[in-house]
Amino acid sequence: MNGRYKAPIFWGGLGATALLGVYFSALTLLSGFGYAQAQFSGAKYFILSLAAGFGIQVGLYVYLREMVRLGTGKVLGVTGTTSTVAMLSCCTHYLANLLPLIGAAGLVTLAAQYHIQLFWVGIALNLGGIAYIGRKIYIIRAL
Image (cartoon, rainbow, N blue to C red; front, side, top):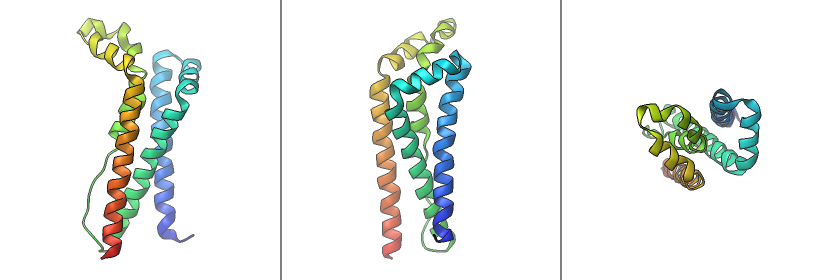
């Protein structure tokens, strides 16, 4: 495999793994590792889809950045913040024990009630990000 393609795959895999690490770390800190495993088991398809989408965006961004470095286009930026937010949204309702003290229980309850919908929003935004970067790569390669 060409070295030009190894870096995007590496960084994409690292990005997906890091997102899963954030998910498991947050849940483990809130409620313990056993609980994190149980939550992952219940929503694994959403969580893995979000992590994969984020990893693909990272890989495409690294590839696009390499194209720019070689003088074949302009720089653009993307973010996987929505992926992280969507993954963690299912867990925020467990902060309800602490947040009433600062008046944020309504927001936590809303996130807990609509966490599946937030997963879908995160997946849709991932697909949009992939399409956006993919289109930029296509345009630059066509030049």
